[in-house]
Length: 449
Ligand SMILES: Nc1ncnc2c1ncn2[C@@H]1O[C@H](COP(=O)(O)OP(=O)(O)OP(=O)(O)O)[C@@H](O)[C@H]1O
Ligand SMILES: [Mg+2]
Image 1 (cartoon, helix red, strand yellow):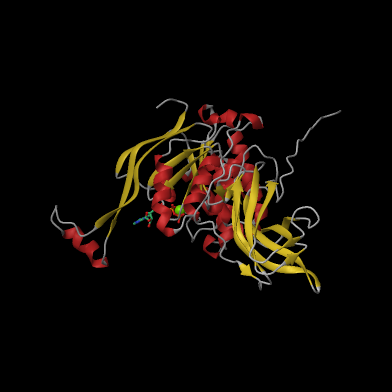
Image 2: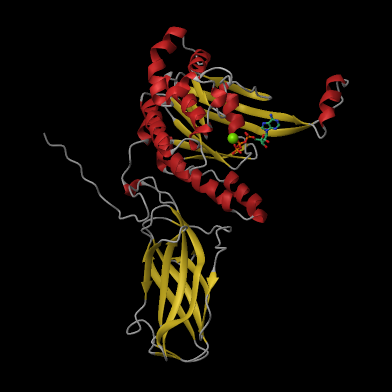
């Protein structure tokens, strides 16, 4: 194994015996050689993966896809059924909650126990103890048995130990989702520092933002197979596609992902350290907008029709492809048609984009003076096309559609649909925007003395 390689696995497989009845386990113990009282469950199949020193790799996948099993094989707490695994460097792992802690021991005793498991001498742990206790910040509880800890305290202490032993390889399995936001922030800062000091970091997370922010590269596991790898942005968008696919389409989506050899943008072949520098926008291969089957609003509210029917509201690309996964910065068209049941005067058509929590982010309404004929006769169909540039930061959004007309009592909705469609804006590593709106900012920092 080259000295630049931290972890290498070839044809790695892990299966678990599954017994359909508990007593079959016992029968197996006394069974003749060829008789099997179990079936094999393949948690990982034929994984080939090389992780370079200094890389930060995100592992994503649906529940049960084999992420934790893979990390346990890397840490040596499980051994593979077949294949090879080589690990080069001292590993600190945060696997399941407090794995490696003895519940009867106090926090202090567990720090020593854990530290020595991680390869430090008693004196080395003693010299780091104050830092560890300060990082965990659990006060007097450090002297109490850990069985009395809340799950948050458990994670705080486990994390404090793992990251203060200056690991060469740090493995984190979802553990961060337990702590509060303040502690999470502290942990991410520390992970960044460990990474910047040259350590290799492996990270399981269900949070797209975390993987994109933190990792150089990501892999997607599904049903025990590694089905995609590449830039975090690329892999996370495949993962989300799989996650939102309707049940009858999952197999197709999975096959499509598996058979694609695309790995993301052109920076894939560069060494890990250079992946962290932002590249000029023009050099990045833009993520294409596409249609994702499962991304359909299930919360549509239809108001009473008063002479018009909105039909088939959807988004299109400029060249007319129907899409619901969009790229920031590109132009799209919101399209719907309006079937008119009575003569309408002063028609105006609107769109509104809202967040999952209902915040109105952006809207528009046409002008009856310019955009629609002054009178629309019964039986006519009005085709509405509202073009806009997607200046939204990554996330899920919902669309409304509404048609206004001059009725006897004044201007009123003649048809209105709320949450009629949903769409997702893809993450884009080169964008600086946070929160809801991407203003395409260009920062300029200058230091003066
Ligand atoms: N000791 C075991 N015995 C039998 N099956 C197991 C064992 N450990 C894991 N599995 C199975 O292997 C599969 C992969 O499990 P794993 O915990 O690696 O998934 P995961 O991707 O980490 O899922 P999650 O997102 O829910 O944490 C699951 O179907 C799980 O039920
Ligand atoms: Mg897991």
